[in-house]
Image (cartoon, rainbow, N blue to C red; front, side, top):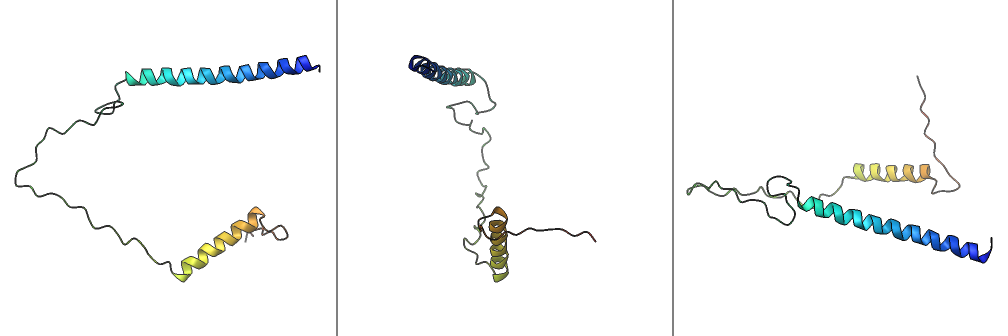
Length: 110
C-alpha cells in the first residue's frame, strides 16, 4: 500500500467516524425537541414541577411522623463472617486468581 492510499484510508475512516458522531448528536437533539412536546402525564413534563394537590387538609388533622430509622450499624455474627470468607475464597479459586490452585465443585448423583 502506498503512502497516498494509506492516508486516503485514514482520512476516510476519520470522516466516517466524525459523520457518525454528528448523526448521533443530531438524533439526540431531535429526540429531545420532540420529547419536550410530548405530554408525559400529570406533572411529568420536562422542566415542570408536579401539580399541587387541590385537596386541603382537615384543620384539626395532626401531621404524620415517619417511623424512627433502624439502627445504622449492626455487627455481623461470626457465622456470617465465616460464610462471607468462604464465599470469597471459593470465588477466588474458581476464577483462577491462585494460579497454582484451582477448585472444582463436582456434584455426585446418588
